[in-house]
Length: 112
Image (tube, rainbow, N blue to C red):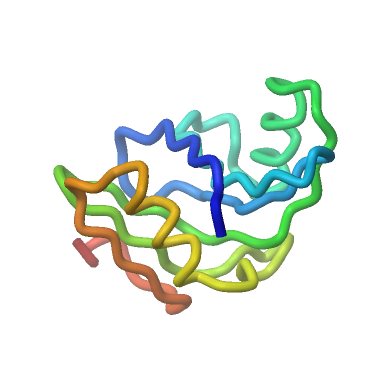
């Protein structure tokens, strides 16, 4: 999967989604703005920012700390994205200096 990656997270334990926009582009999107408490609110924010319609393929939680990123859990709104390994690969391409891991288990904030 060649995907755009938009991660605006300074803190750990935020939600992320993988979406497909009306152009057929796959996007990994995360934002630590506390206004976005639900995965569906992230989808709405992406659509408002870009002016594009999109459908969410799934998501989970993103944990960022120094030079590491971990993806865990699943979205109660949309489920888990079709292939977590592809999501990890897309993030590694944008953040090659980071260690990026992914699983679908729900893990406490002490994971990293």
